[in-house]
Image (cartoon, rainbow, N blue to C red; front, top):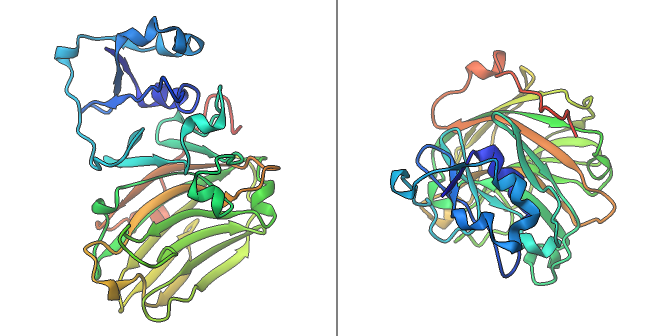
Length: 315
C-alpha cells in the first residue's frame, strides 16, 4: 500500500476522482491514509503520479484500518480534534471536471482551506437550490442531544478572494446542523458571512423563525486570524454565548434547536464554506485549530491557539 499523510491526501482530493477511476484513500488508526500500490502504474492516475509517489510503500499486513464512523458516508474524512469529520461538497468530485479545482486542502497543521466553485451538476440538490459548498462535519449520529451544553473554539482567516462574502452571495461559515431525520429545513444555529457582515443566528421549535443575535460589518485583513469561542445549550431552555477575539458578542437566553421532534441528536457541528451558487466568485476561507465537545473551552477566550501560516501564504 501507499501510505500518505492527511495533508498529502488532501492534495489529491478533487484532482483525482474520475467517474470510472476514483481514488478513495482509507484512513488508518494513526491518522494517515492508504491506497493500493497499483495506482502508481495505473495510466488513469498518471497525472497525479508525483503526488502519489510522495507516499511511503508499506506492507498491508502492518497497517490497521479504521472503520468509518458513518458507514453511509462516501469519500474522504479527516480527524479534527481527534474526531472524524466527513467532507461534503454537495456533488461528486468528478462533476467539477478533470483536473478538478482545489476545493479542500490542509496546508499546515490543524489548518483547513475551503474554496467554493460554481456547481454545474444539475442532479445535485445544492444546484437545484442555487447553493454550493465545501464543508466538513461529524456524522449526525456523533452529534449532541437536547439539553446538552457544547463548546467550540477555532480561528477563521480570510484571503483577498472574498467578493462573494462582501456581496450578497455569502452564506454560512459554521453551523450546528439538525439531525438528518429532522423535518426542519434550516439549522438550529449558524454563523453567517454575507453582505460584508458577520452574523450569529438561531432557530428552534418555539416558532421556527430565524433570530439574529449579532450582525456587524466584518472585513479583517488577509491572513489575520479571528478567534472564536462559543458555548451553546440546546433545548427549550437554551443559551448562547459567543466570543470574538476575547470580546463577548452574544449572551442570550433563547431556545435552540428542534427539541419538540424528540430525536436522539439535536445538532452536530459543521465548518467550511457554504454559499449561493454564483459563478463569478471562488471565495476562500480558512478555519484553524478547531476544538469542540462538552468540556469547557473558556480558556480559549483569552488564550487562543496560534495559527500556522501555510508555506505558500494565504492564497
